[in-house]
Image (cartoon, rainbow, N blue to C red):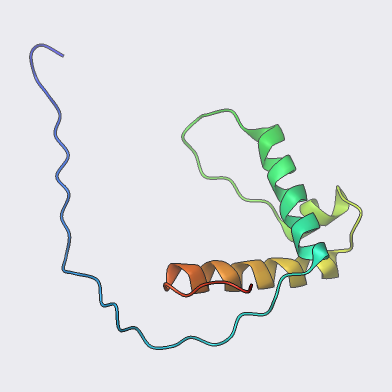
Length: 95
């Protein structure tokens, strides 16, 4: 690069607040939830091409290629997203 270097600066806004408000209890995950998650991971692994782009999968596409209904997939994805939200907010998931 002709002797030029790129630099990345890390800017932290402030120290994280460790005294966050308690969040609602997260519903425990079921075996169906893990089946939906595995199907989503398999679908994404089959599509991967290491390009830089955003991709999304509809509930219909996920369910139609698997052994569960769209309703099961929708409920499982809701529970999984609730768990991710709780983890991002610093709360442990169901034990």
